[in-house]
Length: 95
Image 1: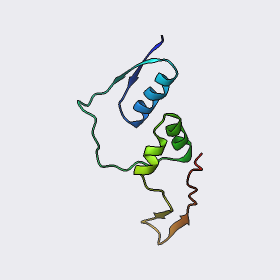
Image 2: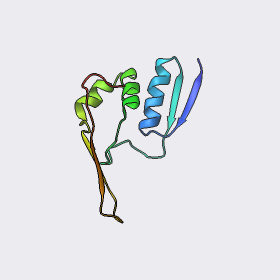
Image 3: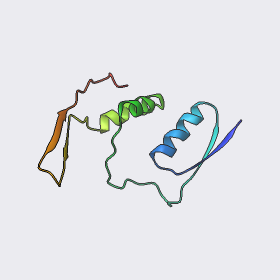
């Protein structure tokens, strides 16, 4: 069995570990924090990332707990302008 070491227990490191284990690798994660806990930050997950999370077996839970992004607004503090657009959301059709 091949062994892989991952430095960092954030979302990237944990998802990588899950996928590598599914492909038969022995994985060890090294994290400098003494515990893994929510920090109150939001996380944007694009369609490709969501597809990867489905392949890892957690996509459905992510969609159940998350909120779909329907509109984005970018504002510029220098000029008086903003960019807005509405994003289509197709339930069950990610990726």
